[in-house]
Every structure is written in C-alpha cells, then in structure tokens.
Image (cartoon, rainbow, N blue to C red; front, side, top):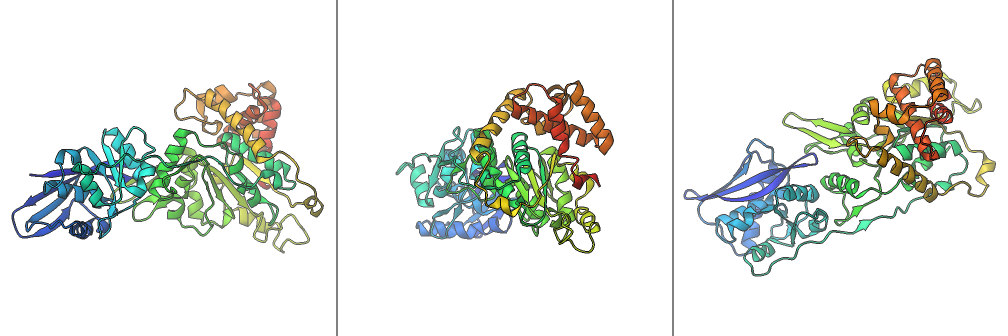
Length: 504
C-alpha cells in the first residue's frame, strides 16, 4: 500500500503542491527516488537512511520507491528530505498515515536526524493554509512560517521529535511568529548640507513612488541623498510586509523569522550580472529587482552598468513584474520598486567645471550619459542636477526638515492616494495611475493644461513623458493638500524633465 506525504516546489513566489508517494514492495533491496529530482533531492535517500539509523530504525530488505508527483515538475532543493522521511515512516507504519496526509512538510535532515532550516517556509505556509493543512518545518523556520495566521505551524528540532509528536508521546506546541521590526535606524536627511532642490525631489519621489535620476559631479552628495531615502518612506503595510517577506524568504534573507516593516533598500554594485539584477541562476532565484519590491532599488554609477542589464529594467518598470524564462519553466516575480539612479555627468565627472574637465568636454558628457538609452531615460519621472556644495556651506549648521518630518508628509500624501485608488486593485499610488484613472485624478486646470501643452511642444515630450508629468504634478498637489492639479504643480513637475542635462 502506498503512503503519502505532501510538500511544495517553488515557482517564483508560488508554492506548488507536490505529493510524495512511498511504496515498500518485495524485491531486491533498493532505495530510489523518481519524479524529476535534482541532485540535492536524489541525495536525500542517504540523509534519510542515516537519520533513521540514528533513531535505531532499520530499513527493511525490500524495494523502496519514492515518487514525487507531478512527475514532470522539476524538484529542486534539500527541503524534500523531511516529507520523504515522513512518507517512508508512514509506509513502515511507524507513524499514522492519516496524520501525515494532513500535513505539508519541508526541511533538510542532518545525518544525526536533526532538522536544518530551509528557505521558503513563508510561501509554503501560505500554500498549506490554502489547502487547510498543517505545516511541519524545522524549528528555526517556525517563527517565519507562523506569520500566516490561518495555518497551524509545527516546528520540530529533529526527526525524533516528529515521530514522538505523531505517535502522541510528546506533542509539539504550535510555533509563534517572530519579532516585527518597525524602526529604521538610518541617517537623517537634515544632515545633507544644501541640495534643497534634490531634497524636494526625494520627497516627491517618495510620496508617489516616482523614479528618480540624480546627476552631478563626484562628491556632490548623490549617494548621501539616496541613502537617506528609506528614512522618509512610510513603513510597509501588513499586506506589503507579508508580500515582501515571501520574496525575502525564498532568498533566505529573513532574520530569525522576523518580519520587517521597513521598506527594502537594495544597492547592487555596477559590476553585478544580469542574473543578480533580474533574477535567475540554477533555481531561478529572485534578483535585486524583486528584492526591492515595495522599496527602493538604488543603482549608483548608473551608466557603468552593462547596457544589457540597464535595458532589462525597462519592462519591469512599466509592469511591476519580471518574468524569468528557462527551458523548462517560466518564473514570475513581483518587482514594483522605486528606481533611484545616480550618475556623473561625464567619465571624468567634472563636465561643468572648465578648470577640471577633461579635454574632450562636452563630447565626453554626451558619450557617457549616452550609455543610457532614450527609452530608459524617458522612464525617469524626476531628473535632478546635483551641483557641488560650496565649502562655506559645509560649515553651516544643519537646516531644513528632518527625515521624520518629511516622512510624515509622505505618509499623509500616500494615505490620500490609498483612499483615491481604493476601488482600483492594480493601482495603489500615483505612479501606477494610467488611462482613464489618470485623467480623472490628474486632469489639470485650464492654465495648467495650457502650460503642459507648451512644454510638451517646446521640449518634444513623448506620450509617456506627458503622462509622467501629470503623475508627478498629482503627487505635488497631494503634498500641498490640493484636490485640484493647478498650474504651479504642473510647472514644478515639468521642471524635473527639462533640466540642462536633458535638453541635448
């Protein structure tokens, strides 16, 4: 008779159910695993054999066959160890079959039978909750999985604890969720001297999740400004925190099962590969785009990234999703991030300073920023020049609003947008608005529309650029507490697209 246990295989953030079937039949002694397992899954038989031996359980001199169904779905990862052991123990009638069949299990076994934490406990708990099953996982993964309140999570330290739990000798208590981190211990925007226009652009970008490009000479403060962006963003909502944590769970980035309400801030180096930025590799893991979901993706030295990597940003910026295509699978990850890019105006960095610029100026600037294609540059809602700070300004005391004060204004503006788009499931902030929804919420007054048309004609704005100015103007109006988009809002929004670095 066939014994069954259940686990999951991961396709992006989706956990697909896998039925682990175990048959112990007469024949030559053997232990085989079928159903398209990878190397880690195939090696599970040795870990299971050793773990059972450590518990003084000897395998019978029969043929043991493990089938992972559906057989055409690739099975990857060491988390199949525990469900394989459960199915085998049920087939040997050591633990009750009906209890095992009501459980989704995942965990890696050590040779001594202890359970090692694995990635993906949170999405696995979501899958178990949908099927009304209990989740069985390693003790170190229990705090993470327990965040899914609709699913009972049993966390065990080893296989012996699992056996005692199912046989009623020593039942395990349900796992408790980990800690929630609310506070961002970062640097304050008030510490940045000068750069008032750039600070204003950061506030607007944060309020509406608009993409921002900072261009300036070395040492002007571009990276300082970007590093302070997390401090002015409101905390993740419970739904956003769970969605973001599912991605981080698959990447193994959750700290001791805790969930953070602080928005992610990812800053990959410009030598990062396409797989690192987009996602991929042997198991199609999430990349920096997806790890920045609901947060900020900061790309310093933007033109230094490989051209192919930069061009892959174009579609995810528009759709909020990235599709990783492989020969045997298509994996989709969410990636609705805010892109903040920083760049020097040219290779030497001193294009605007005649005393320090290289002999190729201004051609060097055109060549350098020309590495960023026009379609990609058109997707930046705000483009800001960051001039050098005067030495005299560095001795002045800190001035302007603190990050906490700016964050409060950003949170108020985002609350307005949440109420505005409450009936539109795919639209959350002004940056998401399009079509009829954009016309309804961002239609400017007569003077504002006339100004926008003149700007579009004078500077040759594309249709995308025209709509992005409207979105930014709507965000500026929200920060001002205005129900209508007025001419000053259009003027300020347009000023971020017609700076000197864009006119050429």
